Length: 383
Ligand code: PMP
Image 1 (spheres, rainbow, N blue to C red):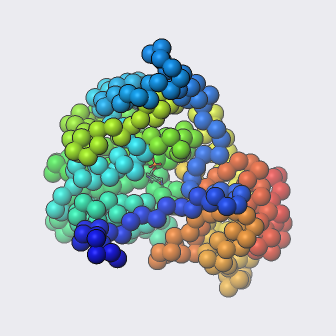
Image 2 (cartoon, protein in one colour):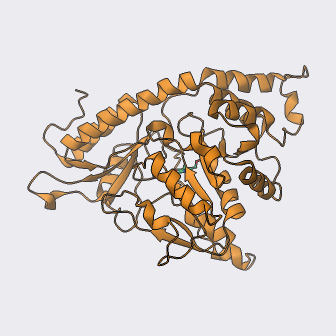
């Protein structure tokens, strides 16, 4: 607390990002970064910016403000997703895009999202002073979309935010189900945001149906599927009226959220689908192999369509009392140089969210799990 903070600042509960250690080398499986490098075309695009396209000295273009309309990036994303550039809103990571969206579309009625989900959503609601209500996941961590629809008992929600796949569970919904929810909310002029941060790892995207639902906004990031968490590029796709709403909020805050490097590198990334399809097929293959091996080691593994696994130790069959707690596992992995993420929250405190790393990272992780749990057959062999 500080006497210099206003009441709003004092009342905030900010998001706590996963650790980015600087002191020691860890195998980082805690923030869902992609373990493979970005497309070479992205690097070339960044180098072109630094070389100074307009013929001046190296780096000279950085003297100039970037294009506030982000034309190059919006045209590239529009081409990649089969929409108009006017239907694309880019930002400094999808966190920023989501933050603007809360401010643009929700107000006095509670916005709905799952009780176990991306922990930034309640933070945005808090920042903008928007009421929110969390809807419990089913016991298997799946989302029941009926709970998000207007009904005489529940009344009219202010809107809904659904990540597909959900984080940190990794479970996905069928696009058709989400489309039906969008339709039900549209009748009441309510916006549905579908956060597709992890959709490229095996969920059905709703973006191809965007023109059927003027109230549907899909939110995307280049941080995971495009290996560019360090460049900070996210974007939303929706009807032109939703996109204009986002620009109204952005331009009341900062018209240059996308710098020249992010615009050029981001455009090259969204256009290089062939490269990223290859990278992400590999992430999916490593995920499936890791999930199977964890099952053998006595872990329960939630079915994942994302680049992470949500797991809990069960202990040997017939002896559930021997299960290790999430906190104990987290600490033991850390001692062995492996970072994963745990959320200290009801129902999931014994689960760990493990990002899918390289083949070698996951071998080391499995070997550590075998050692910690003392499971027969532990040791992380690839077979
Ligand atoms: N949505 C979800 C569900 C996420 O897990 C994340 C990453 N923490 C984001 C959005 C934000 O990603 P970024 O700001 O890096 O685009």
